[in-house]
Length: 194
Image (cartoon, rainbow, N blue to C red):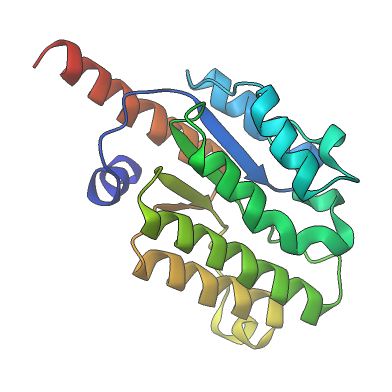
C-alpha cells in the first residue's frame, strides 16, 4: 500500500539522494540511519546550500546539516519554509522527506501554528513540482473522544490536508524510506531496462 501511494502521487525518481527536514535531533539521526539502511543516500549539505542558509538563519546555519533539525530554531521557526525551498531548488537532492512533529512540548497555540506552517510548506513545495516531497506525520489513530484534544485534532486535520493535496503521507519514517527506496529502485531498473 505504501508503494502504491508513491506511484499514485509522485513522478518517476531515479536518484537516491534525499534531503530530510523536521523532527527533533534524535528523530533526525534515526531518520538518516533508516534512510541509509533502506538504500537511500543522505548527502551532506553543499557549500552553496550552507552559504544560502547563512543568509537565511545566520545564528543557526553552522548547526545545520542533512537532516535539518527544526526543533532548535525557537523564534526563527517561521524561516523553515525558506530552508525547505532551498533544498527543493537544489540539484543535490532527488527527493525531500519532511517529518512533522507530533510531539507537543510547547503551548497548544504555538505548536498548532508550527504544525500548520509545516504542512503549508510541504503543500507549497509539492504544488511547485520542482522536487518530489514526502511527509511523515503520525495518524496517531485517536479514538473519537481524542479528537476533542487539540493535539489529536490538529494531527488529524493536517494529515487530511496533506492527503487531499496528494502529498504521500506516512505514519513513520521507516515506512516512508522503505517505500521510497523500492520506488526509486523500480525507476532505476526501468531506466536501464526499458
